[in-house]
Amino acid sequence: MELLTPQELERAKMLLVQNGFINKSKKAELDEKKRRSAEKDYEKFIKSLGSEAADFAGNERVEINRLEDGVETDYPKPENSYRFIYESANASIESVYFWLLHHLKVDQGFSGVIKLSLIHI
Image (cartoon, rainbow, N blue to C red; front, side):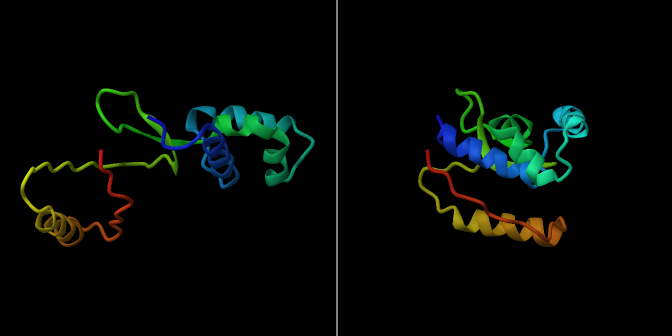
């Protein structure tokens, strides 16, 4: 399952690198390339790498279901991520959703709870 076309993913990775979201394991390699480069401006240096710059992106990989390998997204790799799964064939999810939202914000102290998307599979 692909969330983005290969072209969209490469463009997203380029934007991540341009904005400083570098894969931690490849940061030293990118720093060495920059040190050896004649181009001192970071933005111009990244553009000079062309499509190779996408290899240095620190983007998120998510698991859509347990049967498939994870897919890459156009979001930066988060420091932490949490997943809440609630399945019910005949009950409304609104009461559970709002309870969980309130619990995270008030009881747990997470002030920046953001709902990114609702995925139906």
